[in-house]
Image (cartoon, rainbow, N blue to C red; front, top):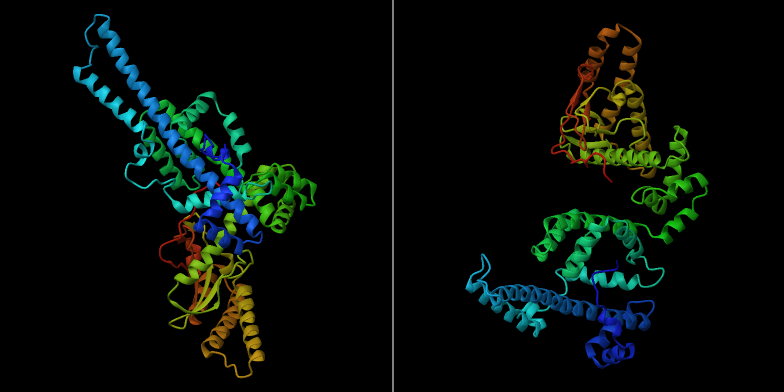
Length: 491
């Protein structure tokens, strides 16, 4: 299925006549010069593009008129049958059929007269005095023209996946095929807009428009089957656009591991194959981790699930860190800001507040509402305090080497010293004294050195922590309106 056009009137145009007409028109000559000046293929491409545009527009205008004529002929046939049934009933000696008034027959004749008149004036019958529009969105129409033109050759990246869509149509039950054929006969352009819509909102609007245009000419059961069929074709088309045979072959050729190559070949077009095309290095790394964790070499669905979990977790972590950093208005200066290395152990953010307190932050953008473990700020707190303090001193030293006139901010030097002092004291507390009093002593040591331990959940649902964490001085720090999470499952 390559589009809604059924009659293809443009194919009957003679190429020489098209070029002769273009050469005789000043605006078309200017168009060709402009395109040639901005194209590596020069005049050859400009002439081919103009010929394509003319043939496509003739196709679309022809379909608009001929489709309108067929619809009118269908309505004329219905009116004729209704009139004939009434007249046959009367001529056979009967009265008017039940429910039919004398005025009804006159109304049928008036409607028939109107349809016949409009049939002889196709343009007026379609749009009246309004401009003739081939599409509701001129930009989308232009894009479809260019995509079709660029996809005309064998290597075109935007060619419509006709074979894939055709296979999806043939795989449908007969009743869905029949509903599609009926809609294609009555409203081909609206049907194609519904199939080709690329967003959920656009799909809903296009399907609603299609059903409105069909205007009750399909039964409720046919409409229900049509909706399902449109969804099936839309998904098939989208899959075909996402991954062509040529692109997949190129991606497979770059994969050295035969087991991974087999998984990608039979894998999910939305995730596994897309990663193979766009980031084969990351694909190889994740495949190695999947296998190291016990994943089977032939478990394509399991690998896809692993990929999705890794990507969602990673993406949520990055989003959470950056959202938290830009939402914490109490922090005046960040010593450690957000980055994309969310899998690296340690604190996520370290900053100095307006009041001089040092904030040590770990973002937990989980779906759960409660957190019971924050190892970066509990079990590994001493290690992380010392590592962060050392990193900050190294950074100051580099700045000093690069700029002999550099003078560190006293607040930063003071914050680093307090972090080092807190690390030494908490290390001593962990090695001495009663375990039952340890949380209270650690909390007091942090308070004395004006250090806060905070948990954020800027891209998650965490709103509370366990009592054991609160005893250590941790608290959940709100970051304003949380970033909405995608639904569980899905693509």
